[in-house]
Image (cartoon, rainbow, N blue to C red; front, side, top):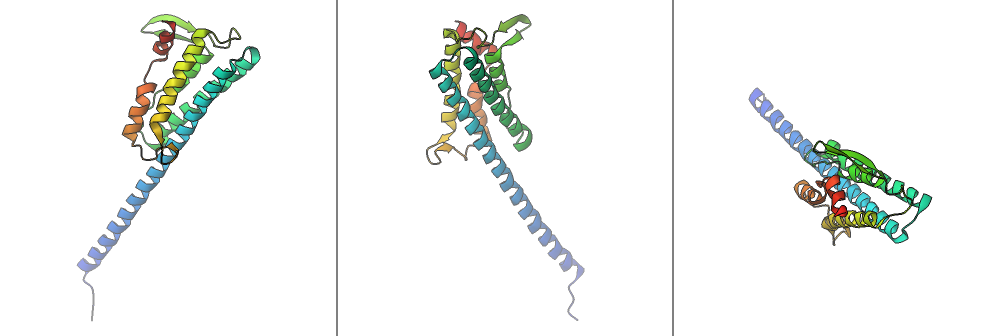
Length: 193
């Protein structure tokens, strides 16, 4: 009678379990990679949308209700990229360092009251409040657009003609950190000088 000993059966089961576990780990790694690439794609395209909107806003230099509408749409775009950024941190990979930079910049354009280092309150009025963009507000938008365009360019790949899907999380954090760790108050003060 040709029987397989219980040690051989156990060894065969162990090998099968290791192969299955290896395959499942590989599959999970690939899925995580796909999720991260989707995150990069969404982040890049929302970033592109914000930069484009600021360019068009500055070109048109609208006033009155049109300015209010365009500023509201800018706030929406900044809020959307903030949501994508936060979702990347919460659901894709917690190593993606999230800051509330984009939502804070939205607040600056629509008006904010803040305390800095227990001093203040400092009030930044909504850009559309006086129905025209002042020279300082245009300068603020120029700086914001420049910073965001720089971030977008850092993510760009000549090969794909859009975001580079091979940017590591560490590289992404460094690209975003150059801009997104700036305090909105400090950014706004920069235009006051």
